[in-house]
Length: 174
Image (cartoon, rainbow, N blue to C red; front, side, top):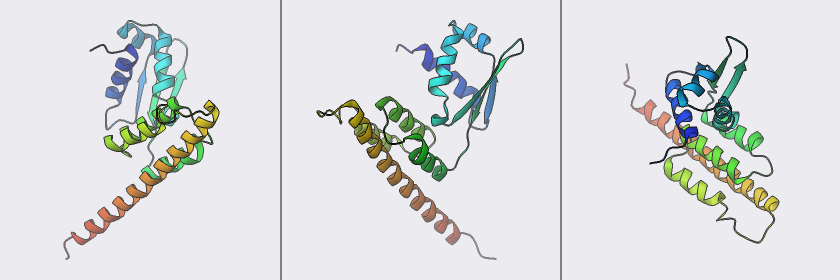
């Protein structure tokens, strides 16, 4: 299997973050040397795979002791969903950006594999292959994605309420 260098760098950084850690500090030049690539490749991965829309903040400190800090933004599912619908998607969204958002929903556990696959299919260029301008397609894509995210948010809320009710019923009385 041919693995792209960008995928390898992303996987490496996510492994360093792990499940328990919320941030990691890296040296761009050391990372570029490790992967045998230019430092600009590291910049590309940070910009496209560790952006705020994917749940990360990056800080870059230049100079002799310079480093890159990647921080995983911790939000509840409802906060993330509200942010996506209110601020991130907007009135129009490209297919590429929509796929990034769906990928982040899957990674963060707000959408399972099946839900993400359905969302991906619904916002794809293939699904929107109708005689409309790209701008109109991006408006439709945004509306479709927002609708699906609102349904997910409601399902996740209902699931949480049901789990909390069940937990209350199973607590032994004193």
